[in-house]
Length: 134
Image (cartoon, rainbow, N blue to C red):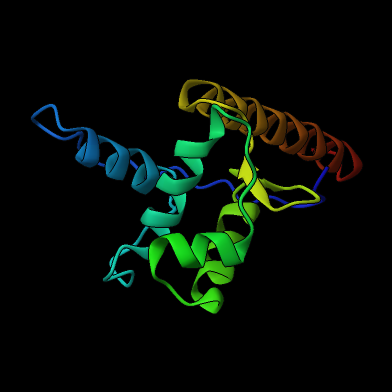
């Protein structure tokens, strides 16, 4: 288990029309994974490649991802770290894999992480208030 995790939720208008590519972009952007600086959508492409292999539970190394996507290994590693920090991807002995094997379960896990964090914050706030006599 990771000691720290960055959970970011951004409210963005959903795509008006059904389009799987736009919906995946919206999902990742809502999780704070993609931003405007990612002009070639390389983080999105890394995420999609990991989503594709999630059902087969097949980990991909940074070299495999770089080769499949035509990106430098450095670029892939940078984006993998972002996905790791978000708790979306986990490392294995043979590479990296989506934390769970489908997107619905992924969002359920993010929700649990968020609730756990909020619960811890509430508990700490109460303890601080009590120690300050508030």
